[in-house]
Length: 211
Image (cartoon, rainbow, N blue to C red; front, side):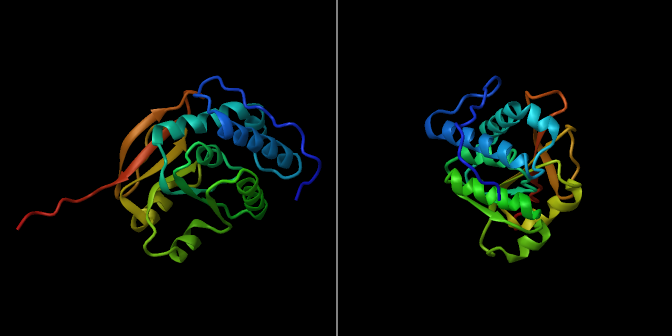
């Protein structure tokens, strides 16, 4: 695990998203500092994200403003923490489950959660392994994921783990997502670029006839 003397916090530059204040801003800056430090030793994020890290963090804040996470939230394929960590920082009423199977990324996420004092649990396993192990009463009001696999395959696994009004929010290049048993409730074009969309899915609810 990378160690060394702590440097001055890296300050996030806010151009497109509403700037958080106080402790939230301090935590975002600390997250950015840790991400860049660890990434110099462990491959957490690619060169494009490093070059445009401020915009990626700001996009996560924009998404949090759209989605308003609260209660039980799950992020699948959390990687280096984008967008889940910034969203968790600015969503104090959310309890976030971070799911990441890569051991190095899992270790980083655990470190960030501890350093930034976040209300998060980090699960170092695959989604299909985790879901059967969860408490049967646990229901997620929101599930988020950025460009992980094929949503039409893994999103249906979540059906029995979502609350009645639960949503699945996909960060992806396309505006459309076709998932069996789910409908597109909203599509938002994010300001980081024309090919960045937030697609929000909801389960179909079949109305039972009276009588």
